[in-house]
Image 1 (tube, rainbow, N blue to C red):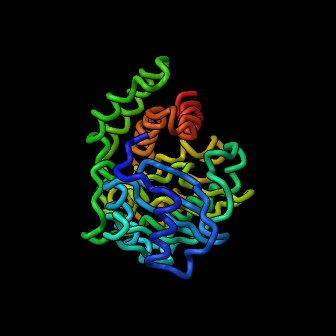
Image 2: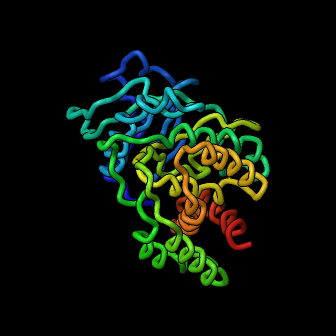
Image 3: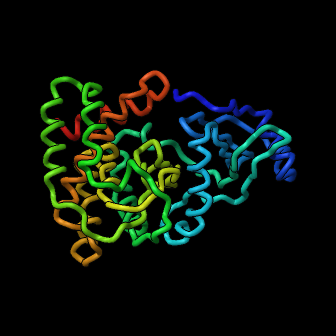
Length: 296
């Protein structure tokens, strides 16, 4: 686990609520997730509390608070748009912004068998189609997403040893194909930044929410579309891609090299899944699934 800059406890969370949103302070609080950047607690039955645990997470939270109110109205799925915002508290020694969002029923899609994700493959594609619209010049910057594939070559080479050795050569081949693909020459579009299946909430046979927009940025949509190999099996990817390709035929700006670049991003994302097996075992499962989809 990436070390926390500050230990976010239940007592601290309740004290922040009492200080800034006292009408919510008596609700039950339950720890749900302690991630790289944020701690999430369920607040009563219908809300959730998200608090950064390190400075980088705080900047990502600021990005979400600025961008999600603009994006949420046009997205056909629930997202963690803040219903309340919290401020840093000198009295409590908490230095960052935080937020209260609506609770989304369901479970992380990464915990659901891949064939049970297929029914909502088209829904997720429509979410990304709605998201991938031209972004303004002041969209949050992200040095790791939406950029030309070749700029991540050193990162991939560093992480290839995390993949099973028998797949190293094929991983490099797919990456070379992605780098050689035509570069994205469209306008920068809004990107989620990290739409892997641990950031998707499934409720039965439906997609109930897309969460964690901390990496939101703009650029080449191929980096978002790389999630197709991490999320779906062949049947799900076919349904997902059909929606994206239909939009391309309608002239919405996708290009011939997009899927080759997206597959390269999938290789990189897959290698990252194996980086923290002890603290993020759910991502190891995502990576194992993607290995099968990419390399057979």
